[in-house]
Amino acid sequence: MRRILLALLTLFIFSTSNAVGGAGGAGGAGAAGGGSGVGGSSGNGAGTGMNNGSGAGTGVNNGTGTGVNNSTGTGVNNGTGTGVDNSTGTGVNNGTGTGVNNGTGTGVNNGTGTGVDNSTGTGVDNSTGTGVDNSTGTGVDNSTGTGVDNSTGTGVDNSTGTGSDNSTGTGSDNGTGTGSDNGTGTNQ
Image (cartoon, rainbow, N blue to C red; front, side, top):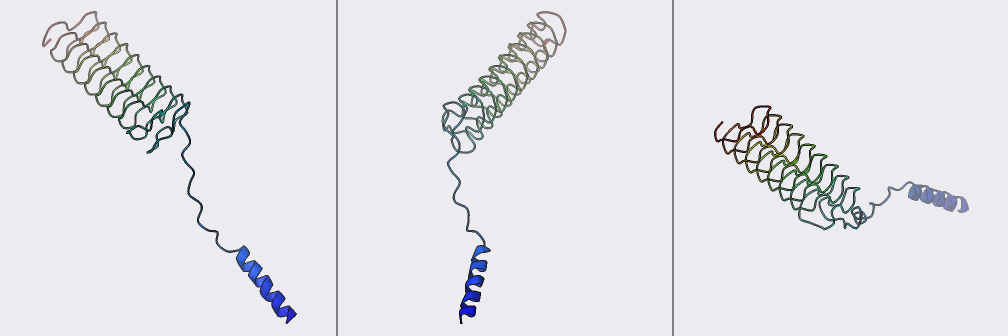
């Protein structure tokens, strides 16, 4: 009898020690965003910069970059770059570049360049170049060049050249030269 009990006890211990573990507990609360930020829903505050995702916000995947003050807006995929003050607007895919103050407008795909103060307008695909103060207008595909103060007008495909102050008019394809103050008329 003693041997039978011992055998049963051994079998019990062996079977329980090899039992499948129970389901893991619920995951803990998301880590707080960098700096004083509070982790929000939908991946907010996932970055490592300062003040990333500082509010719960209403955007998606805000603050995934490593910059400073990223994703203060309500757009989608804001602040994916490594610059400063990226994606303060309400557009889509703002601040994907590495410049300063990129994506402050309300357009689409703003601030894809590496310049300074790119895409302050409300157009589409603004500031794809590497200049300074590109795409301050409201046109389409502004500031594709590498000059300074390109595409201050409201036309289409302004400032395709490499000069200064290109495409100050309101026509189409202004400022295709390489000089200074090109495209000051209308429909050049």
